[in-house]
Length: 129
Image (cartoon, rainbow, N blue to C red):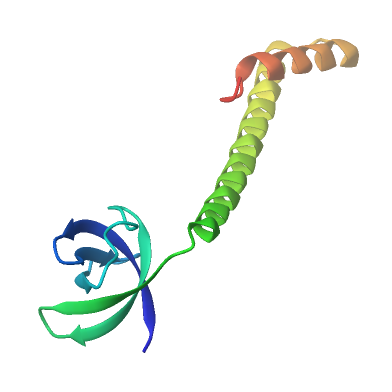
């Protein structure tokens, strides 16, 4: 039978827990849960035993390997950080160019380069500073 990843929402007596399918709002009752090792909020694998219109019941299979989830989350954070830095750099450059264009109608190229460099550093400080 197919296994599904679920999040433990609550634990009850007699090795029973209540959970939610990961990525869904559907809830289920999970039987044969080792209450000593499973905590609320942990991920586990569940084999479905009963699926009805108003009730889903499954049996505990294993604790999910959280390292895969952590690795995926770390990769997503890395991508988000790169995107944030790129947007910050682009915005700083665009604002600096706009400031230079507004204030340097009769400046030499060297003076404009100095103004551009100074403006880029002052306009958008990084969120990580």
